[in-house]
Amino acid sequence: MAVFDLFSKRRQREQGNTPDVYTYDEIPRGLRTQIVQIWSEVIGGPHLSNYAEQNQSDQIYYAIAQVLRREYSVFLLSPDRHLDPHEETHGYRDLCPWFLSETNPDRVLDAVELTFRAIETFCAKKYYRGRANASNVAAEAVKELNIRFNEHGVGYQFSDGQIVRVDSQLIHKEAVLPALAVLRAPEFANAQREFFSAFDHFRHGRKQEALVDCYKCFESTMKVICGKRRWEFDTRASASDLVRICFDNGLIPSYWQAHFAGLRSVLESAISTPRNRQAGHGAGSGSPPEIPNELVSYVLHMTAATVLFLSESEKRLSA
Image 1 (cartoon, one colour):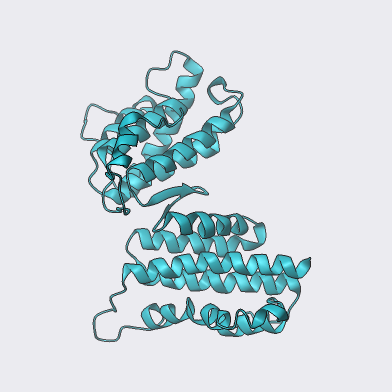
Image 2 (cartoon, one colour):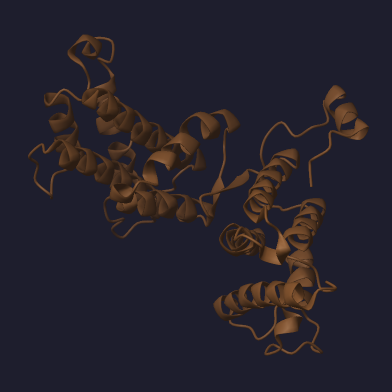
């Protein structure tokens, strides 16, 4: 279903009542309701008239409920003890009431991630619920979800099968999304895994781990490029060594090097220095260092921008 620009929305914008900044620790009831409505429209609801379609829908909800039950160490998600955890047709009735009432935002996002991953994987298959345009329906559902996140000022987006945190819509559009496109290539599989792991750690408050995975992604990207260009490098090389190899081999054209005089220090220090100082060493007998969210967010987005920049530079070198 299309997202309508209703009068009330336009009025809110005119009055300046739209969210100015993103929130991360609350998933509003209205947003959850809209998400359930998307599920019902795309995956299916509990009262489909077509038996085959109902069976497809039940299987998806049951599989998602089973994953969450196992991970949360419970037999049922909702408090309704009349539900049978072994009954496939009860998956929707267990999942939806719990989703609407769950107080832990990370768990709510777990359900969003799993359901929309199922939409992209299963509901996009041709003739799911008899739809010849099933892939388009699934793509529109993901698009609507991300619009709804933005409308409610909730700082997350669903991209490449995962929920990722968004601190700036502009940076997300201009750096993160293009970087994700680069990382989909098979040779970047390790870097992609490390990049998503960094986002996942950040979302769950594991900031030291997020910095470490940013550093790993940075290194992995340079190693892939060095390998593609057949530039000799030690597999144990540090980020600083890899940056030097990339510059020495003309990854940055000579006529640009003056313009990018500060780029080398940015590439060497923007990611590796925060990782080294904040996460790369033991805390000793004292308390672990307090890492500001802003620092981790900066490093995450710098990682995305650097992946994109290195990839585009390598393409220009090949041209």
